[in-house]
Length: 76
Image 1 (cartoon, rainbow, N blue to C red):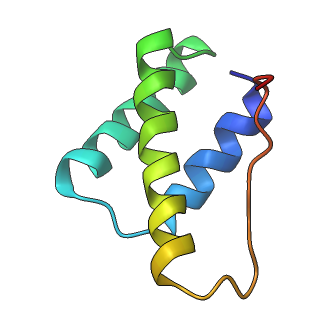
Image 2: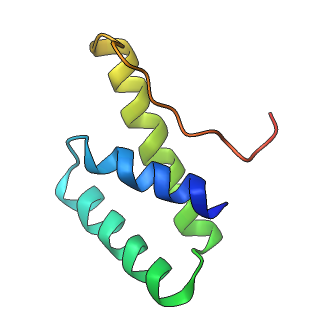
């Protein structure tokens, strides 16, 4: 995962209501990233899943007054 995308996702997740486990996971990923300069593939996968879920909830239940998306580095 590119550094800018990771920073964008972490920033956006801080603005959303997260469960206790999600908050703890995000904090652990941030700590790991600051210590190692990268995250693992498993951390990336879980983080992307949390991000997609929160963006889906926002899209379905909230008015998208100002959509904010982090560009994916993955080609679909």
